[in-house]
Each structure stands twice: as structure tokens, then as C-alpha cells.
Amino acid sequence: IAGEATMPKLDGVLETALYTDDMARARTFYEGVLGLEPIFSDNRLTAYGIAERSVLLIFRRGGATETVTLPNGGSIPGHDGAGPLHIAFAISKHELPRWETQLKAHGVAIEGHTDWSRGGRSIYFRDPDGHLLEFATPGLWKVY
Image (tube, rainbow, N blue to C red; front, side, top):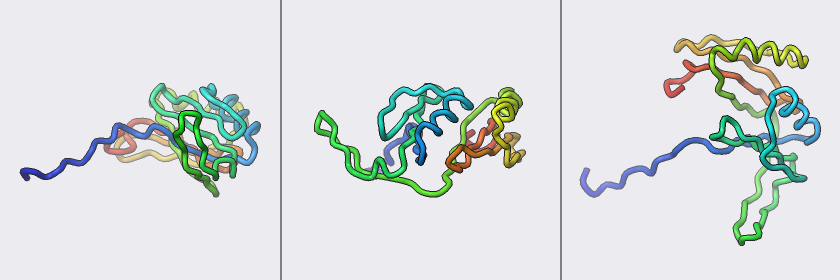
């Protein structure tokens, strides 16, 4: 329709946030079990780059509830989360057995397995704060 505005485009999800009651324990898990390397860390958060296209933020629960004013004059409004949250990591189908072995070697229980109708597979497990994590292979969603 002539003159109708088009919807602005989204390019992806850049950051996903989880919250922890014990940053040292969370870092031990995400760095030791999942092999992630911090790209930023301070007393309220640790950030991990994922596949060079997104960032997993682990915030100390309650540590980000106030607005943060940045040196350049910008600000980040407060936020927080409670309860067991969920995120999924994209993996190749060839990596799934290796991840199952890695989790078992670190005593991390796999709580669920799903074979999706599009051919993907998922396994589910929890981090030390009870967040439900998923490793998913292609064939889960129409877009993945």
C-alpha cells in the first residue's frame, strides 16, 4: 500500500541475561563445564561471547536493579530476574554426543531429551542456580 511505513528490521538477539546468587559458583560452571571465556566481568556481572554473535550476561541477582549511569553520559535502566529461567544454545548435530559426555564428566544431570519433528534434537540440564539450559541442533524451529 502506497505511503504505508514498513516495519523496521531486527537483526537477531544480541544479549540474553540470567541471574545468579553466587557469581563465583556461576563462573565455575559456565567457564569450567561449558568452556566459556569472559569478555567482561565486574562485581555485578560476567559477560560471555557466544559464537562471536551474541552475549550471555550473568548478573548477580539484585545487583542490576538500579539505573547505571555510564561515564559517557548514557544510562542502563535497572532490571532483575527471579525463578528458573530458560535459554537454548545452538549446537551442530555432531556436537551433541560430545556435549552429553562433557556434562556427564562434570556430574551435570541431563533432565530431558527431545526429538523434534523437523529433525532437531535437544537435551536439557540445569546450571547451579536452577536455570534450565538447552543444547539444540538444527531442525528445532522453522528458522533453525
